[in-house]
Image: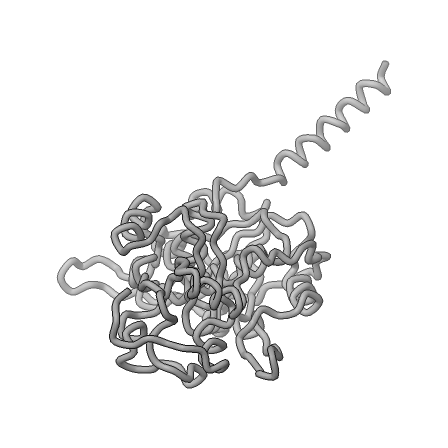
Amino acid sequence: MRLLKILAVVFAVQWLTVAVSAATLPGPLVETDWLAKNTKNVVILDVRADLKSFTGKPVWKTDKKTKKKKLAKIGGHISGASLVNYSKLRAKKKIGGNTVVKMLPGKLAFEKFMQSVGVNKDSTIVIVSKGQGNGDMTMATRLYWQLKYYGHDNMAILNGGMGQWLTDGRKVASGASKVKKGNWQATAERKEILATSEDVAAAVDAKGQLMDTRSLSLYMGTWRKKSYVFGDGHIPGAKSFPNELLTKPSAPAKFVATNKLKSMAEQMGFDTKAKTITYCNSGHLATGSWFMMSELLGNKQTKMYDGSMHQWTLEKRPTVTMKME
């Protein structure tokens, strides 16, 4: 009888440990209050290009009129977070004789990289960016999209990133993180969320729904922002949905409420339930609108064109200027 009681206690402790360590994500976005309660139950991937800021300190300024402190510079990270160097997330790829840059890395290369930042097969992941602006939040959506492509589903993005974490007065660390190598593996290649040039060309011919997520000036072709884009304007038939509409313009760059995003997309001529391909210059910003359509609005018929205008114009495919469609 005593042995049975001991075994029952051991089982209860083990069950409680599993229950405590298994964090259930509330959705594709989490807020700082949720993450503060679950930091020990998740793997936090802090993705940024400004690597020095990870071990820096935040800078606050006092508004002369309101006398309130305002976040001027983001520094530090959430304790235990793994630093993900954004520049290592993408790779060059040979496609039809062309060298296309900033593309999805190969399966083994991405698998190795995720292991190096401490991700395991069963990890619950929360992706954090600096949250200084839209570009930071779409670094988070780019990493989310790549993990999704290779089969990982148990993840979310911290809404507003470090900008929101700091604004909410939560503690930050400034030392380098110690990361234990993970055992994460790519379990799938979900081509249903990846669009190729051929997919886009077919959508053009069929008058399918293409979402151009760049600024209106790039869409209209009044100027060309990136040296790796070789033509002006937009892909024929594409409608404009500038990525700046997705989030607040400065820290904390939180996503606009889902009902408002849906309303804006519909007002701009998009069917939020139709097959959609999002694109930008290189597949960075386009993951933001993919995230909006697929994860926030639930449209699982949404693909992201990884090569975007870089590949499209490199292949000398047609573009349209000075026309709203």
